[in-house]
Image (tube, rainbow, N blue to C red; front, side):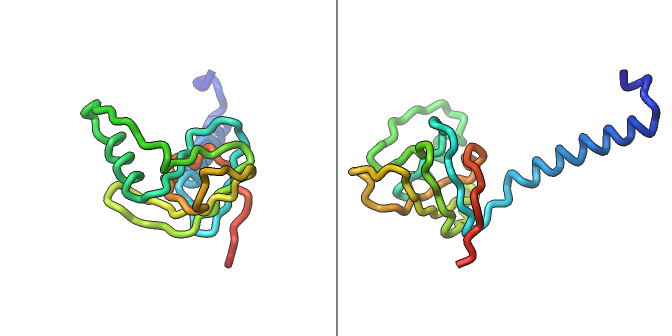
Length: 136
């Protein structure tokens, strides 16, 4: 089908596809301090860690190809639920990659939720919807 197309149409199609590929790739990593994200889905794999060390251990464990499996202490984690919002407060540059300190604005108040401050990996933010950018 592409061989039969006019050269102008073919070049426009390639340019159009290239623009979509580049714009989709560039939007994936532009997270800034002050961004607010909301979970629109009932189930997400976005996990917030109360302790920075637990998050770094989690990243190292999943980054290694050794196949080791270790139970994670779930008392220091929070799985983002539908309607929850997170606000990016501070960015850290670690050897394992970029990490954000986030504030959780939960839709439903949980009894076990002592602190609204957690740590998160931006690789999981693709499942969240951008709401707004706070300036202050």
